[in-house]
Length: 440
Image 1 (cartoon, helix red, strand yellow):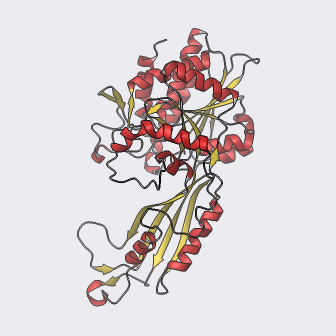
Image 2: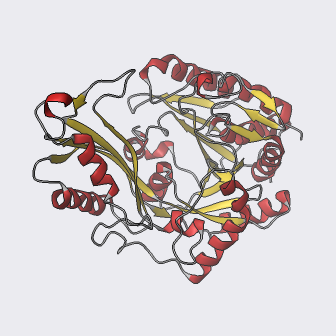
Image 3: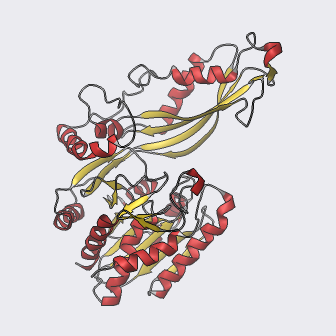
């Protein structure tokens, strides 16, 4: 079946819903996406349930072919990152456009466009009487914030999510098929640095009074050596050492990612001695300062010595690391490195998700790999992903099943950035794969 036109039609409508989860001002966009999904599911014979009280609404839709068929769980998220045309988009980010063989729009890859690959394929199979699996769709609205309650819902109502197999498509591929074997964990924290009771006049006190922004900058800079390695005591001790096979899989992935890496504009990658990019981001714990804020940053100038500054840190945890251990290391670093004329305290911690490895030798993984290689005509690459997908942890923790993590989008899609895009060639391949997966 050629489902591309139907896919484009439906994704155009869903992308138009400005379902930005990080900003309460877009509550109507969240509601619009949920209502659109409700209509699309129910119009096509699904039993629909909206679950409130766990962050933004969680959508659950089920279709039963027969009791003797296996049930496949398909995950997606309808929430998206913020986007404005003024950021540099070629067009309105919430109006799906086609340019140079790609569809452009916020969420066209992350994740509306990817879960819709499966949803459109399944609905077309239903219409043709060719669907061979029972289906459970779970589409959440808090993936981008990491602050939703879907983990709590897993604990309280596990029957909503029970299935024989779990399929998730929320990643990138270097124009060759990819199965993901691990995710790093993550947490965010904010450090408040204080050097005085109030901001002070720079003419009267500057040069004599310490600046909180200087202390904050020094605390961040001194966390790293010249090779971008963290100097916290014992920081890497618990990182799992990749096996010889895993190292080769990383090199295979690097071999096809280099073109995309070259397009980033980064002049130097810190990969250590003989390490691959995949190995560093997949198997290494890292702290990334995502922002430093202090003093005055508005229009014009405010001539002050800042009394307070804030450091935002995002931490990515490799397999075998724990959130608690790394947080304690950061606290100890602050104690040992903050000068005695300043204070540095952690004032907020969010999104603590553990790292996870997936067993890719299961029968379902083997079937998916074989089918991907048939459809795409290339050997499947194995990715050890540096990002985080909390739903994977929930599925494995509650049901003991390893989800099949199938990336369907081009790795130059600019996910989270301007002109987020989905290559039409890969959309068509994804639709073919999904049709054969759920109709075979």
